[in-house]
Amino acid sequence: MSHGCGSVSRRTFLADTGMGFTGLALGSLLGRQARAQEPDGRALFAPKAKSVIWLFMVGGTSQVESFDPKPELDRHAGKTIAETPFKATLDSPFLKSNLREVIPGLHKVQPKLYPMQVPWRRWGKSGLEISDWWPHTAANADDLALVRSFWTTDNNHGAQLQFHTGRHSLEGAFPTIGSWVHYGLGALNENLPQFVVLGTPLADCCGGVKGHGASYLGPEHDGVRMNVDPLNPLPFASPGGTKFREEQAREFDLLGRLNRLSGIEYPDDPTLRARIKSYELAFRMQAAAPEAFQLDAENDETKKLYGLDKDVTRPFGQICVAARRLVERGVRFIQVFHGSDGGAGSWDAHGNLKAGHSKLCAQVDQPIGALLHDLKRRGLLDETLVVWCTEFGRTPGAQGADGRDHHPFGFSCWMAGGGVKGGIAHGRTDEIGFHAVEDRHYVTDLHATVLHQLGLDPHKLEIPGRKRLEIDFGKPIREILA
Image 1 (cartoon, rainbow, N blue to C red):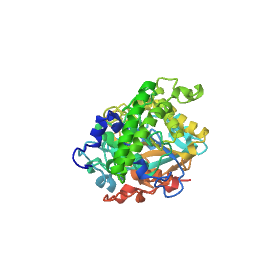
Image 2 (tube, rainbow, N blue to C red):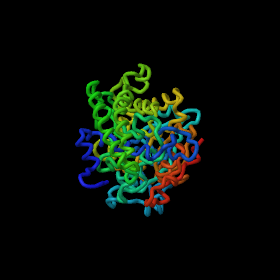
Image 3 (tube, rainbow, N blue to C red):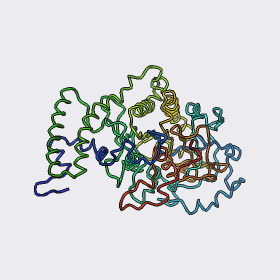
Image 4 (cartoon, one colour):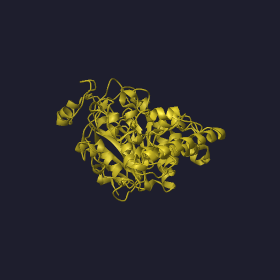
């Protein structure tokens, strides 16, 4: 905003006062005070959850080798779908009318059925059917609400962005689920960001920073990337030593006094007030963030539980421990990525599915199982909603000799804690895992469920001048709510 001759932009002002890094550090923190004076922000009713841990597997995890086993694939392996009792699958109106092909014909149905590549069994008292690649997660089966009937419309990896925003990438940029949570709720901890991103985010091909961005809600609601490293938790700033902190404190003090002088001239400028608050928060955050990632403070039993003693599980185990520690410190939304590889994602199993998926599951299964167990034993699972998801599933048919293609017509996600029922499977795909045929849910139903458990109604999160489609809002999956 310009206020006459000699005025400068906020970015220039920050850079000229030696605080250029703060503009980067605080993009997602501006406006917190202007947005919500009440502790619960825009919460409309009593929440069942306080925080969300969102675990996203990048590339498309196979539903039939994870949380929706299909023995009919083994029985009819090698046959085309037309040669089986399921030939009507290919005549589905949904198959012909709802798919958004960015490149027509790039990803096909793959009609020759491919057998399951891993055994499965029933787990827990509930008897949920889960594959043997997920034993640690499955050990928590009685806390899981499996939803086996999700669908989306992108047959390529724009589905990664679509999963987080509800809208196809060809339609533009839209706020992500994490940014809606940040927009809707006030802070639980004034020393840490309320929307944190762990792991490597989506590649530019598949959404990039828009996968944890706020779009028209404004950059103050973007996710803040953080590293699981107490010496360098903030990519945009170093906590520094005592001398650095003392010098920086003087800089913040000077900047604060200058801003307050401006505040006398422009007393009704909410952006200016928010900026003053955010500078103070940035200084506090550089002290609080390193402590949140002090994983060495965990006891040996906890480190072993998450697999920090093994090379294969240590990287994701560290992220899961950090996610729990952030929840303990009042962070609202922790978005965790696994499998980002600079392209479509490691879970994209066009070939060599058995070797690829078994390797990836070994990296994440123990840490995820540990996270659920650890939250529960600490009394945190009831108030923390854990979400496991991926952008789409894989075809029941083979691609090449040993892979599965992209499959948006029916796939699985699960939730645990945060007021959802445990030990249940909701929705159903057909006998070969092709179509979601019972209690079908577009991806924004997952968003609506998360917001509902946090006490928010997406229809009430209105932005002047922004018209949203009904499908954008989704509907809570009430069948899985306790």
